[in-house]
Length: 196
Ligand code: NI
Image (tube, rainbow, N blue to C red; front, side):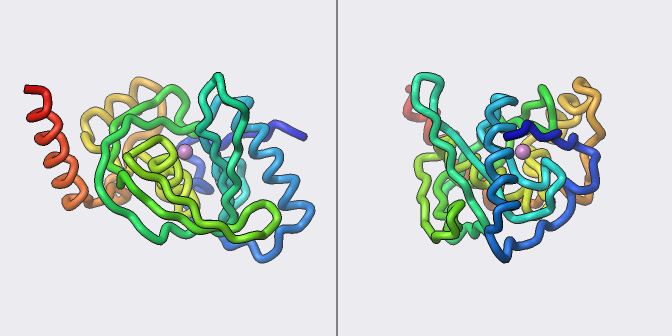
């Protein structure tokens, strides 16, 4: 067991497209165990292999609450096979210490992946819950996409990055999510109606 070093925003590995895992060897299993230990040691909800310098399609997530038992989920070669709805959570990332900003996400997703034993599974996350956007966040890491690329408000993101001495937004990486933004605005309008 080992706690691995987490790469910070600005490291080029975080922008690479990670490679598929061809065999879950002993070495890969050890990497996964160390990723889980590293996630817990840093109080993270998720960690992707590129964040520890391994450009491989692997991530781990644990969305259990403080009073619940540990429940790490391992995703090898994941694929998001369905995405629907919209939500705008405030996210952070272990590669961006102390920096949080609002992003655009789908509220419901279905993902398929292999577990640590190479067995396929399908997982569904609904209602815009933490698991749904954590999976999107970690899956993005495997394609060199970072949460700030989904920033809803680039002024907020710019300020947050500067305040935490992190490199600035990369304009060519910002995602055009007009459709998702439209869905978020509709949802916000509806939620407001409910308040009256
Ligand atoms: Ni992250």
